[in-house]
Image 1 (tube, protein in one colour):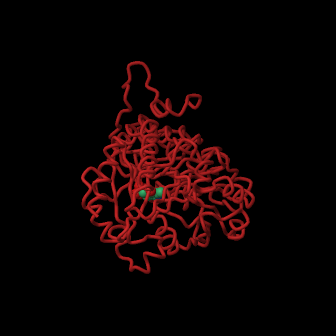
Image 2 (cartoon, protein in one colour; image 1 turned 45 degrees about the horizontal axis):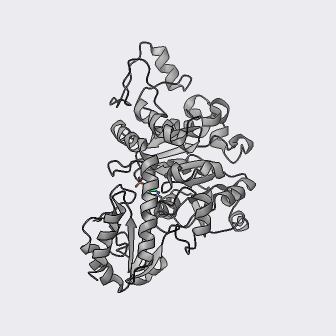
Image 3 (cartoon, helix red, strand yellow; image 1 turned 30 degrees about the horizontal axis):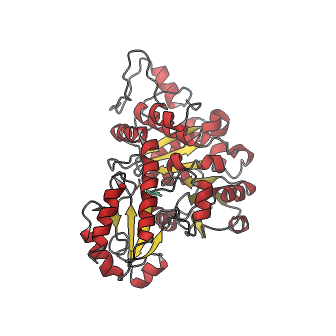
Length: 426
Ligand SMILES: *Cc1c(COP(=O)(O)O)cnc(C)c1O
């Protein structure tokens, strides 16, 4: 399937029905799978033979969808999780033990920031945050003997910084470390981080991949390119025998899917954040139109950003697709096919004006979500960052006039008309 274009793979990758089999990926709504011999089931448990035995570990519907996402990203394999947060946690804990450390660009999704700075810290895994625009020397300078990976978001949610993936990958590889990239916002339609050197790609499939706001989910894709075995002491969990599987050595026995086999066999087994087959089915329907929806989101967002940029009641607009934006040069390099449809802007008159604007919208809905087919808005100072003081808001980079807009795929004329009438209420 990898010979086909990404558009074709959105429809066909991952599931190839045989003669007389269902055309549409079936939902295998079964926790268990039946076998005729004790011996065969034994071999499955010993990882000596591939096959299904319990849906927490693997399920045909989920596997087909993971394989599709891996094909879209150009990876060697994929693994679905119950949420984006679970995907990030599993990917990191797959190579970090208590006492280990990693380096991350600081422009991150709020949930990821908390995971790194609070929960992983409690588990003994520490992080050093570096500015998202750090050069290679700065990145390398943050690396310590116990560092296991470098982390960043292709387009940060909500700050909208564009990661210089190539220079982050160069710095990581110079230190013998893998680069993990959260590619949720661009999706492989707008950027394929593996082509720029990323080793592990992570998604919250909840966003554009699902695209219709139906199911929370996540995915980990392995490029299959990082040579874990050349750093056997650093990545002991992958290169030393696993006692819980009769001495399996993942790098030796599973080659290009060593990372994902360990993540499934150990962490999914023990943590259990497995996706529901029904949700994987819905995600798959979303993926079938990803190549049509994402460019339209990008196109509509650019038009809306230009409209806002010229409006007298708008004080500022943040969108990497705008020529004057600080991220424009990086977006030209990494987002050649368009910039994801999320932007933020401020209205003159501060918090009260922002609230009046939001309450006056009729097409755009107020929702804690982004990347939905339907346009939605959020006022961070009243919603996601409500607990913060004015001072705290300033540190988080959230001004009280800030409105975050996720531009949908309705007619852009209608979206702009709605924004226009709401701005006139201020
Ligand atoms: C939403 C989001 C997540 C978390 O994903 P969930 O599916 O909500 O758990 C992680 N990273 C980014 C960039 C996100 O936008």
